[in-house]
Amino acid sequence: MAMTMTQKILAAHAGLEKVEAGQLIEARLDLVLGNDITAPVAIREFAKIGAAGVFDKAKIALVPDHFTPNKDIKAAEQCKAMREFAHAMGIVNYFEVGEMGIEHALIPEKGLVLPGELVIGADSHTCTYGAVGAFSTGVGSTDMAAAMATGTAWFKVPKAIRFELSGSPRGWATGKDLILHIIGLIGVDGALYESMEFAGAGVAALTMDERFTIANMAIEAGAKNGIFPVDDRTRAWAAEVAKRVPAAKRPYVEFASDADASYERTISVDLSRLEPTVSFPHLPSNARAISAVGDVSLDQVVIGSCTNGRIEDLRVAASILGGRKVAKGMRCIVFPATQAIYLQALREGLVEALVEAGALVSTPTCGPCLGGHMGILAKGERALATTNRNFVGRMGSPESEVYLASPAVAAASAITGRISDPTEIIAAPSRA
Amino acid sequence: MEAKGKAFAYGDNVDTDVIIPARYLNTIDPAELASHCMEDIDASFAASVRTGDFIVAGRNFGCGSSREHAPIAIKASGVACVVASSFARIFYRNAINTGLPILELAGAESFAKKGDEIRADLKTGLVENLTTGAKAQAMGFPPFMREIMGAGGLIGYVRGRLAAGARL
Image (cartoon, rainbow over all chains, first blue to last red; front, side, top):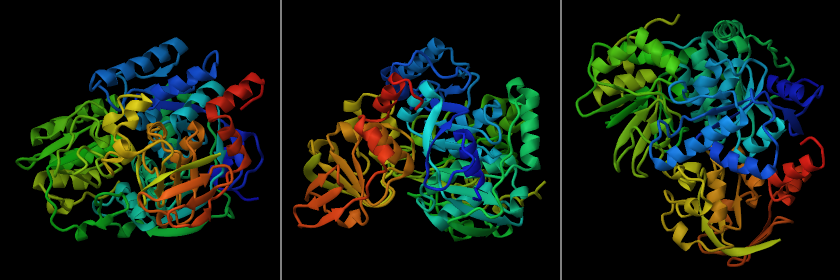
């Protein structure tokens, strides 16, 4: 029977020739991930299992990224518990402040996920790694605890929705606009329990950073995972990682969906018709084209997160903000997603351009995206962010508002003080 | 196993940020989490919920983050069962793994209003609204999930399997 690439990865990790949608399987894991919010619960549950140790010291990653650098005493205690567990268990991939990054930018950068691999993480945005043709999905802390002990997890094999992409994005439209547009089309539960598979000639036009952004937000449509085919861009990405990281030289498997694989439905999107897109409060599905936004004034702009804190995002932000000024009274906060991205942005002069424009450039942290710290909103305040969720109270007060958009829209809006089309500031460069 | 209590009714897409806001995620203490449960959608919830009560909601309950603090907070607040038209997948998984009873019931959002008296048989999935007299049958769970729930959650299940020398 024909299978999707997601189904093939699951079958391979379950030691089965084939699987079908709805089947419950037990699969072997290549990586188990947790952070400073979810790992403390997992560590408590892990102790109850009574296992002598973790299944594989090299296949667990612990990243303190949410409330770090420690925002208060309680957060510090949680980070300490995670640090001590990592030390006691001999966990190889524990990343301390100073070498860490936002987990979903860090894991691919460190070569901890490659095409065809299977990753679970106690963080909903673990679905990010579908960008490289891996199966990855978010789970809870108890799943993480069991996985640390056994190296396996149970899955229900998902059905899939195919997104047939054609054309190439124009102007300031990017991968972020594509995923906001798609979530607007299908809704926040439009892909519930299902796999979102991106396919078609348009895939080749999307950079790896854009694919990470798109796969990252599959969860915002309720999906189990978002996944891209492996192509030359993926192979070049894997080769670059292998050059930097010895462990990433391991062989990987390219899975591809069968031509006659079955899909719940197929949705076609012509990338050349995409406009910069903004999701209004309080759901990511409240998406509007920039031309339909109207006059929305802002108090804060946030550029960063596991969704849009990568080097291309910072380049776009600096290209718009460089030589200009953040509007008087506006707070513009920029978060490079990892230390390596931060360093690269320094070397390219992006940090200088952003700081001269009046933006704040922070150390990597999930911080304001989830209303943790480093940019919380007061009652009645309004932010535009390149993050992934705009639920009630997401960035602070339950009476504040968050609008979601791309780094280009965010940078332009920081200059004007209201949600703005980047072409108001500067014409888009042509895509490479 | 039967549960009986009052309904707290909500709409679609009740997300984990309103179930337990991130500003309280610097603790893993169930009682402390429960004291802030549903705070951003229903400020009176934590003070008025009683052991055995129900949360009744529409589609995609528990969408958003993977924080297990959400089902932990609900369970520690005394809620006997969450009845919803559908659940976001990570929340669904977390509820089963942590032993929070949930029932998927088509049209749940119109089944009960706030304060209605609800009775549910958690084994058969039969849900009754004692205030309106309505009865409905929730979806059943596959045997594998019933096995996990029967062990009190995933940890009990895994511990049992490891003790028996089997793979998970």
